[in-house]
Length: 209
Ligand SMILES: Cc1cc2nc3c(=O)[nH]c(=O)nc-3n(C[C@H](O)[C@H](O)[C@H](O)COP(=O)(O)O)c2cc1C
Image 1 (cartoon, protein in one colour):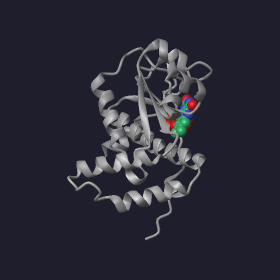
Image 2: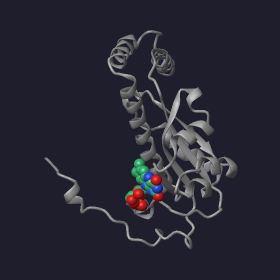
Image 3: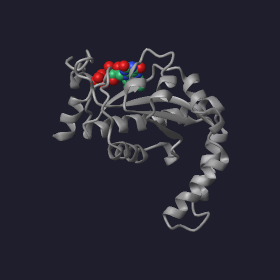
Image 4: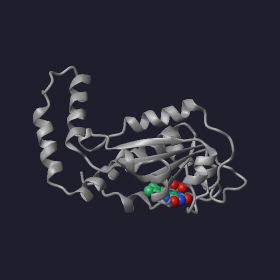
């Protein structure tokens, strides 16, 4: 099965070559992200794509992850700070339009969302939004593997630096996780020849049939 072979091929690359990714591949990964599932379908995060050595250097300051500056493209998954009523209303209006429904057809669902988000505090909302970004990260990792693009999910970064450099606060966003994309440097990457370590499947999975 090609998918499993590609997932065995992928690993979290530690060093990147200076070969740039074709824009077409970047766009396919971004489209896969946009097709990710999200809670209530609200897509509570935005993705910033950075491919600029100077900016990448700034983003990677105060991080041990050299991949931030050496990768071809860096994706920053930025979650919404607040799931506001107006965001929900706009999203519902977009859904009605894309599905050819009458305006207000989704008012029951919309009211349920308002009630749910009014009942949780801002910390819970930000956490909920960030969880959705991690689902997108997983989709991006699989998409990259399918395209034979190397990728490194990264939590080891200074979020306040990234938020500042990309002006995320003003946009009502905060960085949650980032993803380096590019091509592995076989000579410099100590991880490239390491065996992939995983639990035996039956230790991880319990089938209840
Ligand atoms: C949310 C998340 C954060 C991670 N952060 C880092 C990181 O900061 N630096 C790094 O080199 N790898 C990071 N990794 C990669 C993991 O260490 C790696 O996925 C794990 O060891 C399994 O190995 P594999 O992905 O190479 O198969 C992260 C992975 C995930 C899912």
